[in-house]
Length: 130
Image: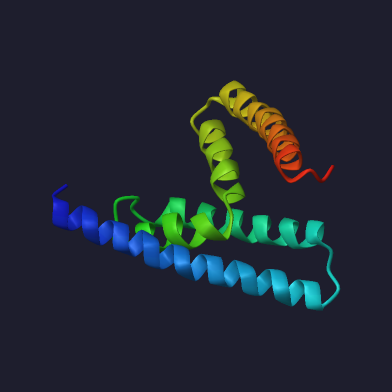
């Protein structure tokens, strides 16, 4: 891949990221205004992102501009949960269910641990217990 192609790809990812972030914010604000809790909002966003990324993985070349804008950019900024779930599905489809299960459990455990440490570090820095 040449520098020009790489620059364009980065621009497409960036543009898609801006769009996905805007959509995510709009969904969050809209669902909150309708009285939905943050957990319901996250569930809906993660489900929509997983559905969208699953469809893209099955129908779009990962080296294409469509993938760069939609998969990496829009859905990447809309939710990272979609990439997590599609990675698990792909391992199962490849006949690697133990790797899929290990990845799923490790991601939850390590993510929980990192979030716990991050919250504690943030609380220590701010002086506000959380």
